[in-house]
Length: 135
Image 1 (cartoon, rainbow, N blue to C red):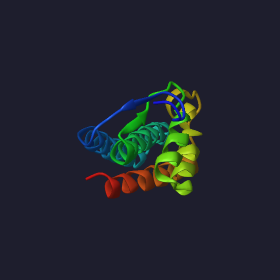
Image 2: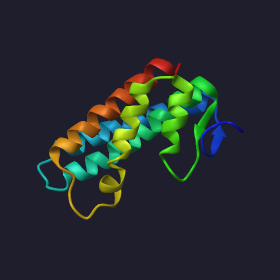
Image 3: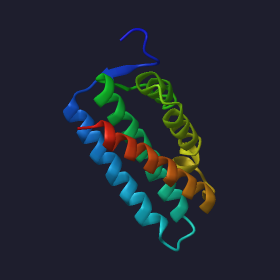
């Protein structure tokens, strides 16, 4: 797939629906964990929100263009999402949530409640956009 940002792989409408459902489940898990009164809850919720956002971006790209990002650098998905949708707000939401990926998945200190809530908002926006685009 020359011309596309980073490494991509082909995908189908069925794949788009699968990634959408995975995104929805990651978001549900994030919201459930975020409601817990544990100091680690925001970090775990953020990690799930990041996964929801990535899956939603995959679903959007699969449904819109039949490709998804397959590179090791998740940031390549931002460029692909921008290219496929021409929607700067969606690409920005993905970029901003991916800024929390390291803390949400690998961090030794906990993600703040404010950053967790921001991640949940961004993930929800991406999942909602995927719902509209995936049929």
